[in-house]
Length: 522
Image 1 (cartoon, rainbow, N blue to C red):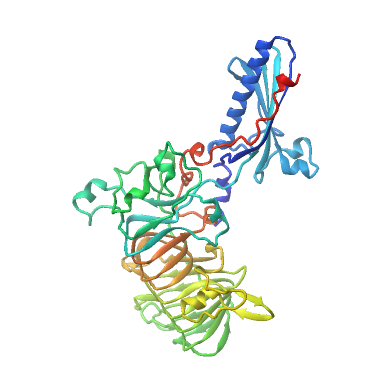
Image 2 (tube, helix red, strand yellow):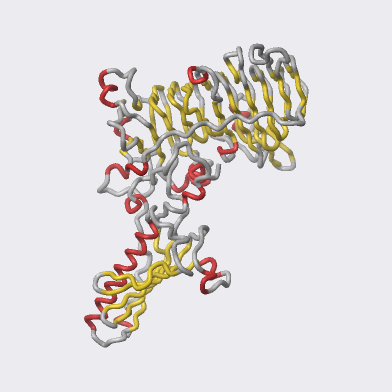
């Protein structure tokens, strides 16, 4: 889950200079050599910026007590580059204790240049974020078709990082472009029909680079023969062949866990109809030839069921009808459908995630989710009245009632980290032939189906991301990406692309203050 935390620190980009000052010590009185030293210091500062930007240098730890370069020969002179963590220094640290580490984001860069005995010192403060590499809002292994009347691909407004207007990435392994032009059913590619819409604004765009002005980029592997991007919206996205070291392939889905003792065994259908229930780990499975006989877990007729921490296992189908599921703690639910072709059969139901809880679902065959809502459990106090239920959820089912805290129904769910909800397929016989269907549902979470096709219908809204072998989107189904997912987990092996490619284009440096003219001040 946290593998990319170790990767994100290598993809750094300078957002801005927040201060800059120049001072000089003229060891020799020769004005020419002083000017050369000053010019060399500027070159040294550019070198330092590039080192801090590059994804090839572990600059946060690749230094000796803060010294990144010492006596480095450059343009006929030498430069020394020293780094200080500004926040550490403000807290009282000094010397080696104030050197950058993996958590450093505010850096003072000091460049000492020496030319023929003349020395110039330049100092700049730089704000360097730890998040610059972009994961994928959508990853379609082979085919992605967006063919609805009004489909949106963009950022989740409620996500904290959406205000940064970062680019939205789509990934694919399309590699049969030539065949696709002749035999679309054999090839791979992305079809974006007339109803597809994208974000209108992106950070870091430059007038000289048309691609930088597009908020959505589609990446395909360097080894591919090409990519097919068709449809009236194709011109609104930029197709990017990746560098060889950035080429991508999907990772395998994780192995499903098994229920562990203590758990409650059920050998027949386990059905809850109405009422309020609090459950702990269980297994629903036939005693005799469990691989051949299905046993379902069913919640019906307004049942409110709390699943507490642990692993649950069903050898049949998980059926939800007009019910409410509350996830309390870290819950894993494994559905081995056996002869039941539909593992998840949910209709007119809600799944709510308590604070600091997680929900993982492992499903063997198909999925049929209709008119459901999966998201955070939102409890709040308004003018002394306690409310339980996200107003967006209530509006989804036509039950919204305004109050002084919510005069209008929210257009999206209250914020929940999408990595807290994860759906995975299980590797078993013929499982990759089965469709995962979501219709008229709102889901906060990550869906990862490297071998399966998924179809989204109706007014479905996905807040998080999706990766699948094939992705088919219809009607008004839409995607809202949370860029915080860049930090947590990846769908692909190897490095993800930097969001926007060249960091100079994506995050150009801005000089906020030129500082004083040291020569004039002498």
